[in-house]
Amino acid sequence: MKSWISLYGMAAFFIFMPAISKGQQVSNNIVKDKPGVVDTTLIKSFRKHITVHAFLSRKYTSIQIPGSVTAPAFRYLPNNTFSVGMGTTYRYYSLSLAIGLGGLNKDLSLRGETKSLDLQTNIYTKKWIADFGAQFYKGYYLSPRNFVSGQPDYWLAPELRLRLFGASAYYILNHDRFSYRASNALNEWQLKSAGSFLIGLEAYAGVFKNETGIVPNPLSTAYPQGQVNSVRFTQIGPGAGYSHHFVLRRHFFVSVTGTVNPVFGFTRESIDYSALRKVYIFPNYNLRAAAGYFSERWSSSVAWAHTNLVIRGAANNRPYQIQTGNFRLTVAYRFLPGKRTRKLLQLPDPFVEKVIPIK
Image (tube, rainbow, N blue to C red; front, top):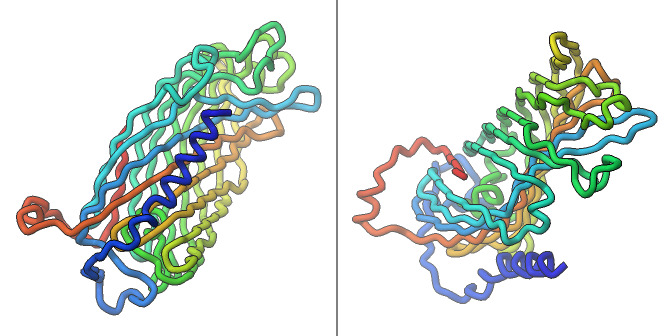
């Protein structure tokens, strides 16, 4: 309980600390992107500022195994830690580095070890939102605790592996009045509340497998997919949604985004030397939310992103689900570079925001 209290206190500090410095005098040297492209009474850009940011985050990627009439569903979770990191942004290029903090987690010895590599690139222009990701996980534990009778604490699956690849692109219909970057890249300032409908396309591919089976051996006879040891899937389909940025007293904001993606999917479940195949159409969904503070010098936010993938198989009428997301607390500070610094940072300016976190 104490650790959660400390995290809530840290979140409050991240959001409201910049407001203490509100009285500082900052020159109004704001760089506009392209005259006439956006409504400058609603959006201010900081494209030529250097922004440094610190953050605390925790990512998660879980695998839900469906149950049956007599057996409940269960979930595999990775033993991830909280991460702390720093980064910098100039023009439309951003780089951040993070390291794990094992001290913020409890019962690590009971949950086994997870090895992971998480790569992500986000490209945000005035009109487009594009996300690309690749995740590699090995080592999970089963939730809830004591789910397998005769096995104390968590059932460990050290050889369970997940490889997940995803890409999405959405067009911002109201791009001249609404900035998606204001809450997700923190390099633009949305001065008044605005929103936009989004239309686009998403695609996913991946596999999760365990040589001894995706269902624990003591429970294999109770589940229709009890003999399955590998599930491969591919999905693609159109998407649509809406994003809105609420501005409170000019400096505080709340942002919410939701999209629905009905995909055409193909699944292959392997059982020893045979395979079961399934073709289906089913919707996935994405949710994002952020709240924080914004000014010409400081900005901060608490953000959450969540993606739910539904994977239908032939072994069980009920679907598998992969849920992946991230909680993140961020504080950012920006300033104009000097002439010498600008000469050292002669980067191409394609009017594109690139956010490439490295873990």
